[in-house]
Length: 404
Figure 1: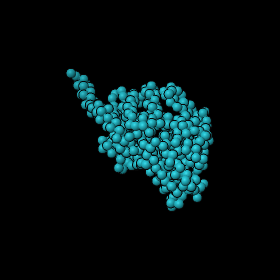
Figure 2: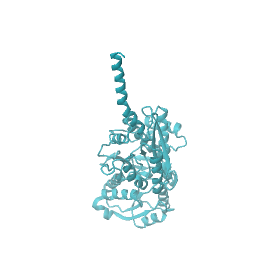
Figure 3: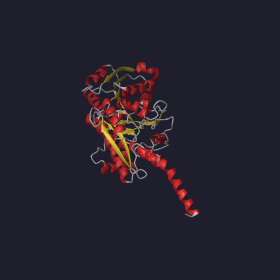
Figure 4: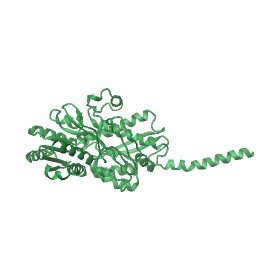
């Protein structure tokens, strides 16, 4: 062998030796092969929160579009989405299956506050990314204690602050009646309102009642609130019960200022079942483009979303804002995976999720963007008030930016 040939051979061997650790590491990346990235989620396709199930279907449809475009750096995305029926014990079972049997890279957009709470400690102990959970509980922005968990939507406490600002400005002597789900989700919304009202909370809030997701109806709670003399109804309910509340308020002839939490402001999932006329004048907050709002009909992003629905999710309801929510969340996940490049370790996935700068998924409202950092796990921190006109939501006021 000539000296030159020996040098070339030695260089080739050295190069191979340097590449071996990376190749071995690649083989050991959970959920990652040379051609595929497998991620998982739990979603309530059945049970009291089943109206949210369309989010998972929309996200799968978005990934199908990305795969048709070639995937992420040559890898296709495989989403394993399992039904947990909005039941925490079932969430634990299904999440363990995703991690221990399906060997997914990460847990993405699992829905629900009580359900995600049930697996947060487990996922953090396993060092599995629990990203962009489909719940706005304030607890999801705690990187110091739960560095593998991150929210996505504005926090419920932030939203409560927005309503409080509105009431203090427009109805400083309001009498507020509150209905909320008896869990961390409901309590978070109530805390946000009370904190926003400050010292006035004690005099402005005249009645608080709760419901359980197992309750057949909430009619008696609505009657109790009406009897309290409240002229503001703070409605902290998931879509099934929001529809019941809207209908009962209408049937009673009660005319409070109705503040409806954003997790139930979908025209398709909550307002239409309740009755559009009964829903008139309800106030909510928005951070995404409402698909029923005609102001977006010529917007390029809306046109892209509508065409995507036609092609990839034709059975989906275009009046259901949850389909825009899923589209935006999936776009955010894709952005993180793109930023990861060829380093698809779980550590780098979280690092990139915490390195989003002015990223604007196409169906977010203009002026609202996602920003994160190693100490800021609240991706969206801006919202805008809207009122329902009997057909669609109409935005009013300015975009409100808060710290979390």
